[in-house]
Length: 303
Image (cartoon, rainbow, N blue to C red; front, side, top):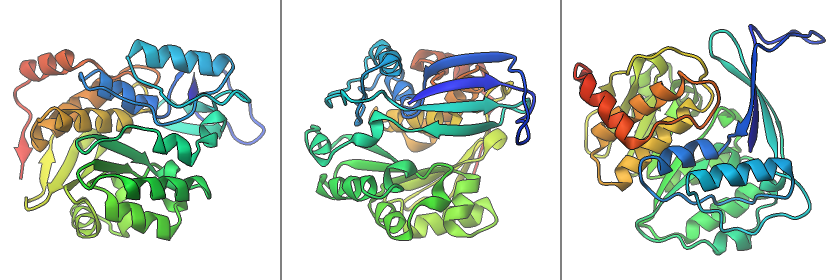
């Protein structure tokens, strides 16, 4: 989707009017993850439908700039959707979304994708939330090889995902990637440790990562103890896309053969750099993350 980003002091009350100090129109949505993935040196594919119109032109240019493939035929009847993202003085974001061509994805489109056993597929909570599309996506996932790594990010709309859909995607997911609020909603728990244990018992054929904001993230993988990975300090400008960046770097590193703890550490750095910049899709390239890690050797990993 396209993000129309507005920096404001605070979200106005109903009927109010505020002046934005900055604004930005840029590609967002799933592009946040795909661009982070691609910038780590791993090929990314957009499994969605673009459209025709000015917003689709912006999206195509962004995908091309990161060499992200978009093999599915475009919807000629409408433009891609957009999201108004209001970023307040704390860096928190509030969204208003209008859908477009991306919701016209068809079962035949997914079936046409050349997904192989060693590939990684990231599924958003939005993909399994809406009637019609959810059933289509879940059916397609069931056709994939058991060796295909499926990661699930429930998104901030996790409470709106039908229970049956949620159970089905959790049963198939190799990795569950979420923030602490989403984890608490999924499990009904009150602490990170409880959430990790509860999620690991329900899903995560390979593991679970819970992002904890300024505290970094925590990880539990099959047969391993929980691990807390410390944060990379940064100045918060815009948290929009931070979780997507974290997921993109983490999964890309796994695809490259990096061990899980190092992948999570690199994901923390990528997300920290991203939130210091206004707008989504601001993940740094892999060599920048490597250089930053070399400069700072004092990040503790506590198990």
